Amino acid sequence: MADILGFKEIPRRMKARKGFESWINRFSEPFDDNTYLRDLSDSTLRALIQPGEEASMLLYELIMGVRGLGRGLRFYFLENDEKMIVMDISLFLLDQFRFEAMRRLGLVTDHPTFQVPLVDLVLDFNTRFDAIKNQTPCLSVDHPRFDEYAKTFVGDKGSFVRKLIPEVIETFGNEDHGMSDR
Picture (cartoon, rainbow, N blue to C red):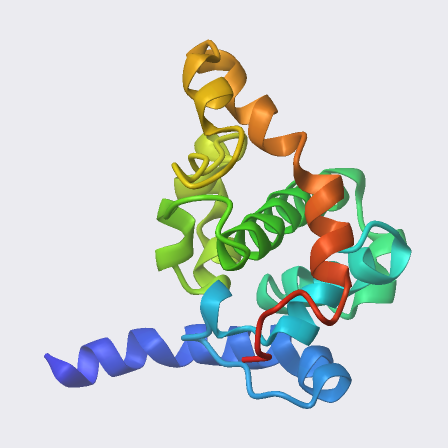
């Protein structure tokens, strides 16, 4: 039985290796099929949560490598349906990276995606995560605006958390935000 499981894990490891190839070169950190959001260093997370083309290309590199679609620059030559899938997954991952930054700053509680390796967030997007892509973690009870959050209509709580993202990007973007680099 262990041999069968090993054979199933080999393609996953190969996909992870392909997906993380540019990240390993860029960030000089180890990434593999068992890398979770919590395993990213603060400096890597800082680069990934930024708006703009550079962070998008890093996400495209990971997604396209894992899904066997080639290098990130090939994104512009993908068929429209493949391009849409890559963009959907990249937006989902961008949220997850930003939620992780929020977690490190003590702003949000645990979230199911925090317990899933990055490779599986990409590989299982269509089957497990597409349906929950708009869900957000809950605001921490220690947050100064928690009472306001608690009184917010359930359907608007995600929006409440997302409105904190610009401040999180700014705070986490400051290398001296009181956290040690992982």
